[in-house]
Length: 225
Ligand code: FE
Image 1 (tube, helix red, strand yellow):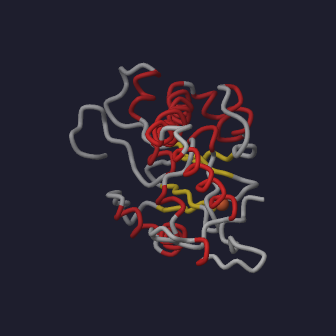
Image 2: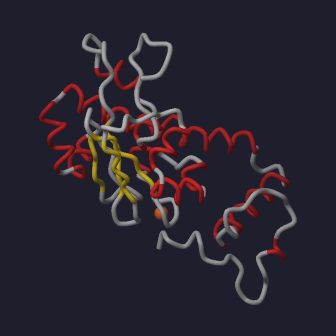
């Protein structure tokens, strides 16, 4: 069901070009659903029934605030409770459900742990499968063709572009999400955080670290980890 992004949008003899009068960069022709949503949104805005800024704020909340904050809470719990971390790494579905983060687009989860020896990064090569209950909506770059293809071919190169240099002696593992199986990265706990509470630790965790394109900096550091 998920893998429909790449299918041609238009059917019934109407070409994809014919329904486009706007200009923006396309990776592929938008899906039929995306076009319907866009049309509906434009109409609602035009009629004054919804405020585009309010819509943007809503999307921003799911992309940047609500979603990744859930994943951050999971990570902070794992850092502070070894038994929870063990459950998270062996049976992520149950461990995530313990904190209330189960549901649509996150039914079957695997959590992969970053260590000094291994760095994990997540991609969906076919479309944009992403664990909504713990991360919210995927960022635009996650859905882009270059990220989807190049992360597999040249993960270190892609990570470098995110400002994340992984030393040669650290193994980089790439995990390809599907509609059936989605991944969350458990980042390494930054140094100098022994005195922080679980809540303070959660505040350090970024969305990008949960996808694996970033590492976490110590709280007092001005630079990155
Ligand atoms: Fe996908």
